Length: 265
Length: 265
Image (cartoon, rainbow over all chains, first blue to last red; front, side, top):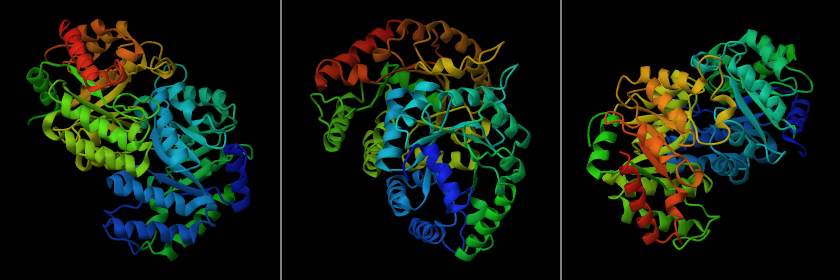
């Protein structure tokens, strides 16, 4: 797949007829049919899941915390898993990085060059020079945190008297999208705000967590999707731990999510 | 050293008569007398610097991006360097993490349990549940980003009509400091704002970057320091690459910074 990241995102939605991103957040504290609490079993489970699911989902999201908790062994797992997925599906590095320019360049190098992932999640608090290194190569993209799915989203993301901060971030990101490789993270747990984000940033695809375990609205999430800026729905625990967490359970959950999403697409 | 992190911070300022934190940001693109552009030479340089400097500085700051750029090999370096420093000096994991509660717990596990670092830098954008896992064990601390030293600090950190966001963050953090283990990151590049942060958060030590390469004011940084909440001055490139970057150059730069800082302490 060539072209800027958002073009690749759109093409992959078409090719796979899926807006579903599978978050590979395997939890050692939650043994399933595929793994126990050992690192080896988690690694095996992640490879088995990718092997069976890569042609059923839009792509994958790798939450770095679930790898870093195992230190360098976890980072090696991250490298091997990224390599295993390869070109079979797009991969978002959910690292939520954000730091001053020269530091952000090193984080972007780690995620895009070293791990060869397609996109990264980025925190906007430190502003433009913290985000720009993730936009420098149009083939790679950044999803900037806008309105997140957790309770703490209420603490600062709505700050401001006239326009809440998250809409300021959305409008700012829209203006920064010169290379067609920027998107936003907006939780499905805020159904009435999804439309406002879409109005503030009409050209940006939204990466939407909060469906599944967190109980957000799929209908609202897809109502804010457009052909030019299709939204991507991330589900992690709601798929990995469906039923008994066996591969059949996972495939059935993916099939159901794809059908539910496509009914609103 | 026992007790909550901020008590350990204060005790270490007394014991070492130093407010100086050395950021070990070794840059392969900037060869010096101690290293070239190879990972092995960077590893050797970092160990040599710690060996010579640990009793001359308050502590160290490890910027994770400079390790992660080398992937799992870099993470192994981070593990070994943390272990090498051990109990000889306090270590801040400058990771700027921030994510929803269950993810943040994994990041805190990586930094505090796996790497056994003393404190971490944390991004406030995602609110309370993103920060709390870093405060759960009083012996470990968190420095929450408040007003950063980079140009992008102007983009969102001053947002709001009445009170700028960074002061809202400061007051919020002050209220969250039940266990005496919370601090704030405030750049020395904003001298007139340091006093306002101090007023909004009288009990929190400030971790202050922006001295040295970024040209901030040491006098303003130390004017906002108090015995109860002593400020920590971080210098990275200004020390590591002083002169020709030999150990003697580094030791001379540390000595000069300590004297300059203590003159205002």
